[in-house]
Amino acid sequence: MTREYTIKVPASSANIGPGFDVLGIGLNLYLTLHIKINPNSTTKEPLLTYTGEGSHNVPLEPEKNLVTAVALYVLRANNVSDFPHGTQIHVQNPIPLGRGLGSSGSAIVAGSLLGNVLGGFGFSRQRCLDYCLMIEKHPDNITASMMGGFVGSFLRKLNDSEINVVGLPLSKILPQHGATEQLPSPQAPKDLGTHVKYNWNHNIKCIAIIPQFEVSTEKSRAVLPANYSKSDVIFNLQRLAVLTNAVGQQGKPNSELIYNAMQDKLHQPYRKVLIPGLTEILTEFTPQTHPGLLGICLSGAGPTILCLADSNFDDISKAIIQRFKKENVECKWLLLEPAYEGALVEEGSKL
Ligand SMILES: Nc1ncnc2c1ncn2[C@@H]1O[C@H](COP(=O)(O)OP(=O)(O)OP(=O)(O)O)[C@@H](O)[C@H]1O
Ligand SMILES: N[C@@H](CCO)C(=O)O
Image (cartoon, rainbow, N blue to C red; front, side, top):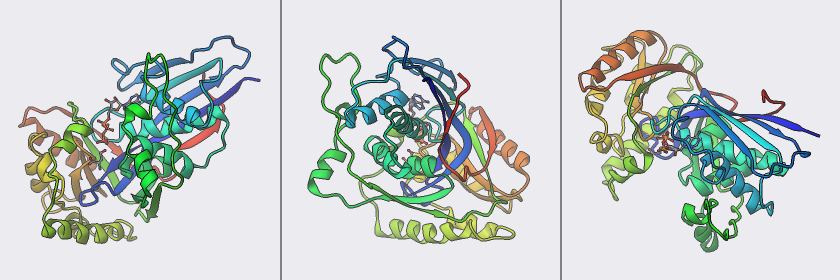
C-alpha cells in the first residue's frame, strides 16, 4: 500500500546574544517535506524535487543533498541499505540558506525524521536528535528545530569510545556520492543531547532582518578566538542566566532587562569583520531609540539580525534596513514567532 507523509521542521535562531552554542528559538518558518512511498514501483532511486530557497544550487542527488544524505545515514546506521523502492520526496524550503536562520539545522532534522519514517523505526524525537548531533555538533539550532520553543541545550559527557564516534568527520558519517564501497555508518550513541524549554512571553515577536548575502557557519566560526578571558566568560554567563528568565516573565516585557541581558562578548564582536555595520547596528538600536524593541542580536552565525519586539515591528525593521543600506547591504525582513511545537510528522502528503 502506498504510504504518504508530511514532515514540517521550523527554522531557528541560535545564541540570542549571550547563549553561544547553547540557546535557540524554533521559528514559525517551516521546511516541509512531502513524501510518497509506492512499494509496487520498480524505481530504485528516490525521486527528489525541490522548490524555494536554494532551488538553484542545492544538489538533488540523494547522496549529496543534505536532507536525503542524513536520511540515508539514519537508514544505514540501522541496517537498511537504501531508500525503499518508489520513494518520492518533494522539499519546499522558505528558509534562506547561510543567513543565520538555521537552514542546515532544519535540513538535518528533516533528514533524520525522514530516515526514521522510511525505515519505520519508530524512534522518538530525542533519539532522532542523536543522529542530528552526529552531523551538527553544536546542539542549539537542531534542538530548537526538533523540539520547538525557546530552548537551552548541551551535549552530555561522553566516554572515550563515544568521543571517537561523535568526533568522526562528516566524510565518515554521511554517505559518499559515487564511492564504489560505502563505509559502515556509525551508530549514534544514545541521549547525546540534553535540553530544557524555557517560558516565553507570547507578546514577544521575533523580527529577522535578512541581508542578501550569505555567511557560512564554518567561516563565521573560523573568526572566533581559541580562548576567552575569564571576565568575558563571566559577562556572558551572567546575562545568559538572566535572559532565560526575562523573556518568560508575563505581562509587559521588561525592555531594559531583556536588552541588557542580550549583550554578548563571545562571538558578535569577532563576527563584525564578516558583516558590515554589525557593531554599529547592535549599539545604535535600543529600546530608547526605537520603542517596541526589546533586544537585538546576531541570529546564529549571521548575517541576519534578530530583534525581539512587542510593537512597532514595521518601523524597527525599516530603520535597520535603512542602516544596512549605508553599508551597501540590501535586506528583506520577516516577522516571526516561536514555533512552540517543534518538528512534526503527519500521515498524508500533497504529492
Ligand atoms: N534545505 C536544504 N537542503 C539541502 N541543503 C541545505 C538545505 N538548507 C541548508 N542546506 C545546506 O546548508 C548550508 C548552510 O548552512 P550554514 O550552517 O552555513 O548556514 P545556516 O544553517 O543557514 O545558518 P546558521 O547555522 O548560522 O543558523 C547550505 O549552503 C547548504 O549546503
Ligand atoms: N551557535 C552557532 C550557531 C550557528 O550554527 C554559531 O554561532 O556558530
